[in-house]
Image (tube, rainbow, N blue to C red; front, side, top):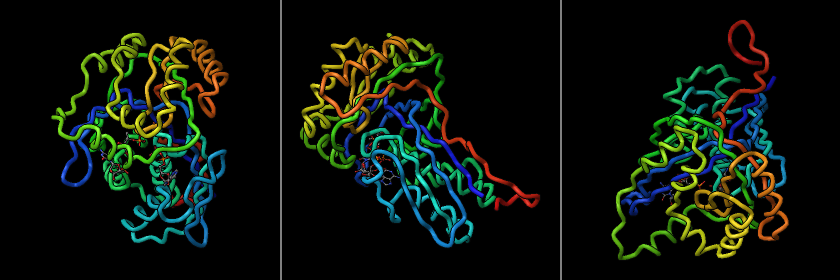
Length: 309
Ligand SMILES: C[C@@](CO)(OP(=O)(O)O)[C@H](O)COP(=O)(O)OP(=O)(O)OC[C@H]1O[C@@H](n2ccc(N)nc2=O)[C@H](O)[C@@H]1O
Ligand SMILES: Nc1ncnc2c1ncn2[C@@H]1O[C@H](COP(=O)(O)OP(=O)(O)O)[C@@H](O)[C@H]1O
């Protein structure tokens, strides 16, 4: 028997970045919004831990113990004194190394799936603690919806969202390494005073009201200059989306995926079509937001004792 969990990608509608901390991380005011592009993680009992991956970007996904899904299974098994004897399959639809938290989604998904498969009944609090150990973005992948992440992004406050926002994502030819983008942020800001990161009131209000125009006016990403410095071609993609009628255009997190906010679903389709025709990106996809966090979609068979076989 197996368990399948569906986990969304994210866009950062605000990413305010503070100065580098002594531990190498940066304090953030990170406003996450989960979007309707999903990876599906299926776990099945096996002789030993094994990871497989399918999807257009599968070749770029590590299948060893550095894979965040494998690390999640090892962490949960370790806490319960279990053997991590499980086959993890990742059906990957979230772009890899694109600033959309695909690896984090797989970590959160594998954690929830293994917890269900092994009947370990881990509390939400402990799941979030394991997520934070796996990576700064992983707790949000578990929670979904919208949330403000402080600290290095792992301390979450759930946010209210009063409507649906329609996005277009342009996938770039190539990836960007998150640590490299933060290093470039530090280099570009050398000598300057970096203010404390604070969430924008206008942005939180726009989310709560479901006001697309106000959200478009309030989005910001402090990592964008660093991503553009390392991947200058993204400026053309941003310009092509704006010219096609996007209310706003920004780099998603550390990039290189770019995100465009449309007035409605049909506007999003038109912008996606224009981006594909522009030749400035590899592909373009539409996705609504918010989207739910890690959700079991195929629970497998639970026997009377509560364990899954
Ligand atoms: C930038 C963001 C925005 O949501 O995501 P992506 O756009 O890459 O998906 C996140 O902060 C990425 O989170 P995540 O990808 O989980 O990063 P981690 O594994 O925790 O850290 C990877 C590396 O990124 C840098 N890092 C990450 C988070 C943070 N607050 N400060 C940092 O300086 C550090 O160099 C760290 O070693
Ligand atoms: N399950 C996974 N899926 C994708 N990448 C993974 C995974 N586990 C580890 N990685 C590593 O994490 C890096 C960042 O990938 P990803 O999480 O997709 O992007 P981002 O951090 O930009 O959101 C990849 O280059 C890859 O080496």
